[in-house]
Image (cartoon, rainbow, N blue to C red; front, side, top):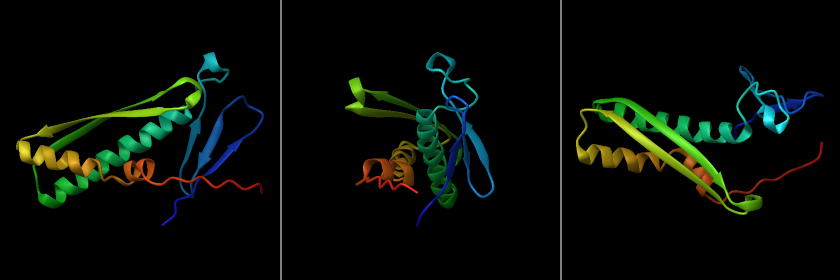
Length: 131
């Protein structure tokens, strides 16, 4: 399975249009980094991908099991070492609903299996070519 986006930047400092066949969003840098703060930073987009995938994966599982999950709230923080030599992603998840401790524990295990989590923690290779 593959997923594709197109990213385009013109002469604007750091404002990048990111497109799929049916959606467009803007990535930018904050003003203190020379951007205009018109959209998410690239790291915020990465964090958003993990948070969104986590919530959707947990929701799908709970719905399939017909568990009383009312809401999932996920906070993702990305921290870097000096010169980006190390990266740590911290994810905090809150489940709202009349769930048992066993159900909460199982939902936490399911969160670990969301596709973005598995992508980021798996054998990741980035292949770059010049067009």
